[in-house]
Length: 305
Ligand code: G3H
Ligand code: 13P
Ligand code: NA
Ligand code: ZN
Image (tube, rainbow, N blue to C red; front, side):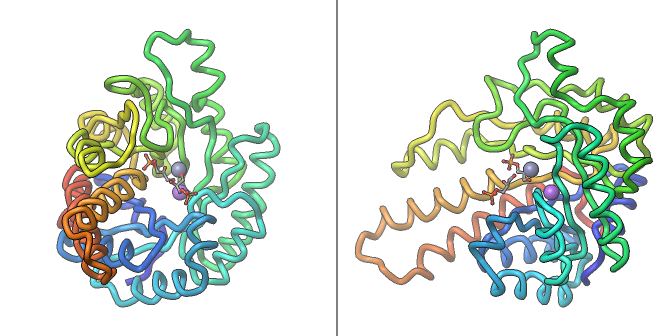
């Protein structure tokens, strides 16, 4: 069933588990995520970026919204990193039930003003809103306190931001970053900062850049001819701890992309004569589904629907 993001996330924060927001760009990813959610009896969030909407167009948004309605578990269809009011309006018109407005690169007052404007429009049609405060940046453990403060979410500012904007959930910057290169070894996560934010902000908190970039997947990608440097992701224990401190929505894109592409590479290498796309997209879809299912186990959302 199609529900708002807040409906899913409020329960998650209250009961202390996380819900995955998985980025989808095509039919195979959509099917993989929804099948995983139904098999795990887990609520789920389908995340479509502006890039996904441009690539997949009306075909993708129609599939996402209609399949979400038919799903036997709660599903929210979410705009990931909406960059403007206009972009949010397009998502609302397409039937999304959750939107993100990301003005985190603007100054505080601009972020407040632009977010407030989006909250008014979205709430008028019953859609809930994610906003972001702070910069997503990989942080080295030894980085000076004032340098961290300049980048990462300030707890007191977060409290004021949520009160002034009326946003429903908040993406925080605590050291994670997007993509396959999140730092060296085990990237540093500022759990102490998260704890302080969570004490001041009762709304569900959101972790971007949460992919694990699992070494086995990186190795399979490499072994099949893919080129990738010193990739590193977020340790499962750091995710578990973040959830125990108030993170309710966990964004994952990179892990799914890696799995999908590694399996396509493997399938094409194995049978160079094959040119039926179903023969290599099928196994790739299955691999995405397996990653999603294991993420749901890590987040603790299995059996919550
Ligand atoms: O945070 C961004 C997401 O991973 C989506 O990426 O803008 O390339 O679709 P994208
Ligand atoms: P990853 O690149 O770690 O998968 O993060 C995805 C994300 O935050 C999407 O908004
Ligand atoms: Na998002
Ligand atoms: Zn993100």
